[in-house]
Each structure stands twice: as structure tokens, then as C-alpha cells.
Amino acid sequence: MGLAQLNTVVGDLDGNVERILDAYEAAEKAHCDIIVVPELAITGYPPEDLILKPGFVAANRAALQRVAARTRHCAAVVGFVDRGPALYNAAAVCAAGEVQGIYRKRLLPNYAVFDEARYFAPGTTPLTLFQIAGVKVGIAICEDAWRAEGTIDPQAAGGAELVVIPNGSPYFEGRPDEREQTVGVRAAAAGCHVAYVNQVGGQDELIFDGGSFVVDDHGDLLARLPQMTNTVAFVDLIIAPFSPTPGNGPSLPVIEISTAAASSPESHCPPTITPRLSPVAEVYDALVLATRDYITKNGFHDAVLGLSGGVDSSLVAVIAADALGPEHVHAVSMPSRFSSTGSQTDAAALCTAVGIELRTLAIESAHAAFLELLAPSFAGRDPDLTEENLQPRIRGTLLMALSNKFPGWLVLTTGNKSELAVGYSTLYGDTAGGFAVIKDVPKLLVYDLCRFRNERAGRELIPEAVLTKPPSAELRPDQRDDQSLPPYEILDPLLEAYVEHDLTRADLVAQGFDPALVERITRLVDLSEYKRRQNPPGPRISGKAFGKDRRMPITNAYRG
Image 1: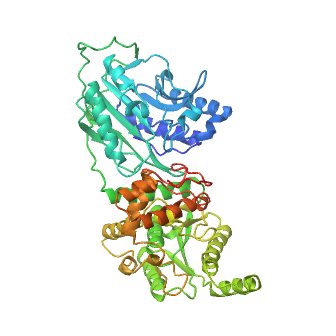
Image 2 (image 1 turned 135 degrees about the vertical axis):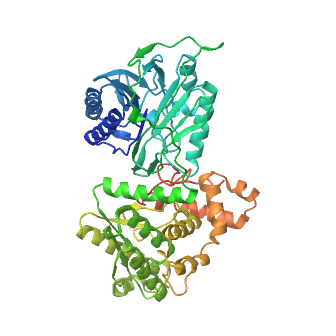
Image 3 (image 1 turned 90 degrees about the vertical axis):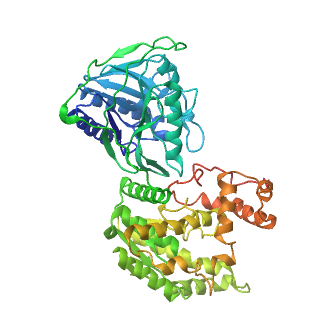
């Protein structure tokens, strides 16, 4: 069988058809009997409100017919939007030039980043199996396999020897393990083989990590594809014929597609298990994939960012270079009177090591001009954060000017999740840009990712001085983050508990956090919601990210 974990593009119907057909032709050449592509591969996933357009739905159905018309012996399981009394998240089984049958997703996720109940009705048509190369095959789409009340059990009880699962399962830390464990349990309980095919690529805030796999009827892993890689793999499966046992349900109806396998001595493909990436490598490669896809799928080809010499901007610069190639990354040093010499030399050292262009635009004269312009309005008032925040706002203006002047350059912002949580950023300043690469990366993980990238390179791409000096925004003399915030070793766990696990203030205190600190930090998080709503999108790598995942009201008087 073939597993095609494709990097589709939402709305690119013609391009997605070509991606599917390229995979299909490879499967035919390899003498495959069946190939499975991801959930909603025709439209790209998730298509969101595009499918509220009747013309888009009609075009997606026409695109499916173009795929079906090209099929021959090998059956293709293709995700698309079906239309009947309502709209359905569906998969078509295509072979011999036609759509042979359709499965409609029954369990629609409507939590976290999923809104499927907004668009789709649950499938209710009776279950049907497909005989392919003599094997009875069932289909379940994503959520249908996640829950015990899904369709794997009834299909296996009705005769299915293999269930294939097209997926659009977004990545976050720990998700790949959860998938394999959950599907393994379902397969063992049902007593059938399961092939799980996940898409790969970045789509707005979401990252799809691939990692498609096959488990046997005992739930044991037989094959796994690489993570973060657009790839098509072929696997030989030897499946014993279905034997009814007491308690099995009645046999399900079967649509016959092929009774014999398309065997060929040169096409033997024993299952292989690609090793899993380490946890830090997994996050790093996910961020690279997300950055590359967001930039290129939206018609940009270069990235520009402010490089301060601090750890956050250093990490973003290296991720961008890995995503696009260093020749497509433009770093801008924008020193003020408060910028340390060390930070400027650290930025230059990184650019030399990575091969990134560095230009310097000193902002002192612009800052002085703003202060002079505002002096009459500020008369009688002492300097405060206002004067400090003019600096990042000037820097944001310069970066946006470069993006405007050089078409195809996208501004990357460099704020991390810890800063965004407590509002330690300047609206219309360091938050100005098109994509926030590390907006879901806590500060301590930023350091881990930097060290990992240096280890992978076998040399210092990010200077050691960047990793050891106290973090600072450098907006006033001798400024350090720990003058405004608790140490990140304390702050990050508190934020994780409050933001990702939804604990109340009382819960946090009960867990041992200092009550005064809890009150201060949680209040900062709540007050900063209006800022976060105005931040650019960025990739989700945690179980709950700011954006379409965590949706808190801006106007909010709850203090629990």
C-alpha cells in the first residue's frame, strides 16, 4: 500500500490535484493496490470558510473527478468536501477511472483549533467496506479513529481487515506519541490493521508534522514515515483473511474493486520504522517547516527581521535561514544609545556564521527627533515607558519600510510566548510584522532550541555570549528582564499552568506559587489580551497557543 503524507495548499485545487496525481502515479509504478492521501487533500486542510462558498465546493468536487478519471488498478482514497443534504468531510475511493464509493466523517471535532461542526454535518450513511486486492478495507477519518465510539470497531466487526485513516492532525509537543498509542489501542481492540496517513506542512498557525504510520492487528507499530517531510512511502502488508468470531456483528456490505494484488518482484517494500526526532529537534524542525510554508505559500520569498543580538531574534534568524536559505534572510541591526556594543558584535558574529546579510540602521537620530517633536506635549511629565517604547516603534517602522520597498520580503517578529503572555512587548513596535515565528515558544525553550541548533551544526551559529548574558530589551541604561519579571525558571511554569492548563489563581497558589506573584502575573496576562489580538499569526507548538486556540475575551472582569 502507499501512504502519501502530502503538503497540500488550502484553496489550491489544481495544485492539490497535481500533488495527489504525482503520488498516485508513483503508486502505480510501484505496483501498489491502494494509496491513501490526507484528510481533505483536494481542498487543503483546514479550508475554513472557503467551504461556505458554493462555487468552491463545486470546484472541489470537479477536482475529485479529475483525480478519479486518472485512476487505474491502484485504488486511491482521497479526501474532499462532499455535498448532499449538507456538507460533509469525506473520503472517496477512486479506481478504474471512477469514484467507487464515499465515506463521510461521523465524529466532528469542535474543540481547541477545530471548528468542524461549524461547517459539516456528521455522516450517517450505512458503513460499507471495499475489497481491494482481496482485502476488506474500511475507512475512518481522523476523529473517527480517536474516540472509542468511532468507526474502527464496527467496521472490523463487520469484516474489515484493514482500516485506513486520512488525517489532518496538527502538531504540538507530545502529539505524535499520543497518536500512535491511541491508534494502537484501537487496532488491538478491533483486531485489524490500521494505516494512519497524516498531512505535512504549515497552514497559518497550524503545523502538520506527517509521521504517518501503520500498526498491525495487535496494535504493534509496523511502519512509520519521517516527520516534517513531504513524502510518499510504500509498504507491503501481509494480512490474514478475516475470521468471524463470536460477538462479531453482521458482515458489512462490500464494494469490490480488485480481488488480486498487483504483485511484482522488483516492487517489494518491507515496512520500515523511521526513528522519531528528539523532542527539541521536533519543535525546531516544526518551526522551520511552519516558517517556510507561511512565507512561500503566501507569495513571499525573503524574510527581514530586527536582529538585536539577543537570544530571541538570534533564534528567529537561524530558523529563517534554515527555512529559506541564508541568502533570503535580511537582518537589520537598529542600535540606539542604550544598545550595548556586545549585542551589536553578537549580531554581526551570528550573521557571519550563518551567512545572513546584515545592515545597520542606527535609530538615535530618529529617536531624538521624536522626543523633540513630542516635547511640548510631554512638558511637565517625567520620562517613563513612553520614551522607551518609541524605540521599538521606530524599529518596526523601519522594518515595514524595507518590506514595502522590497516586494517579497516579509517581516518576522521575534517575541516569545513568555513575553506575549505578560505583555512584555510594544504594540506597533516589536509586534509589527507578518509572522511571529516563536510566539508559542516559552523563553526557557528558546534557549534549548538555540543550544540544539548549535549542536546540530557542530559549531557556534548563535554566539555563546548570547546564551549566557542576562536577557534585556536594552531600552534604558542597564535594563534587564528580571527587573520587570521574575526569573524565567519561575515565570514559565506559572504561565504554562495558567495559560495552557487553565488553572485559576486559587489553583496556582495551592500548587505552591507565591500568592503575590500569582496575582501580579495573572493580571498581566489578562490585561494583555488586547495586545495579543493585534499580534501577527505564528506557529502553534504547544497544547494551547494564543490565537485561534486560546480564545479569551478582551473585556473580562473575572479574577478567579
